[in-house]
Image (cartoon, rainbow, N blue to C red; front, side, top):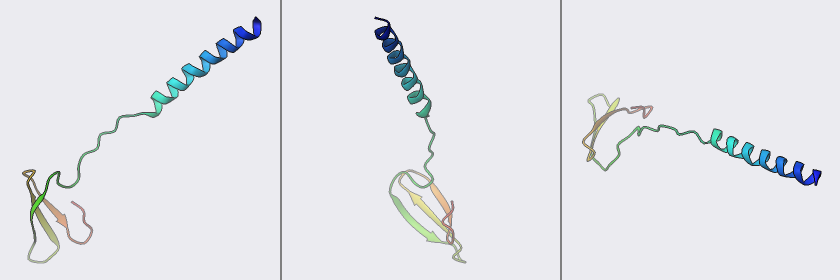
Length: 71
């Protein structure tokens, strides 16, 4: 009877520990889109070719560095 009691307590301890660890590992993460979120309608280089501007159906325009691709 004593072994059964310890087994039950150990089982509960393992169960609640696993739930706690699972919750701790799942962290919501905010991810913001870097580029456009819809089709790109047009793209044009500036006069020196160092920048690219893109216009999208998501009603945004973005200016990119042509060499690095950074926004």
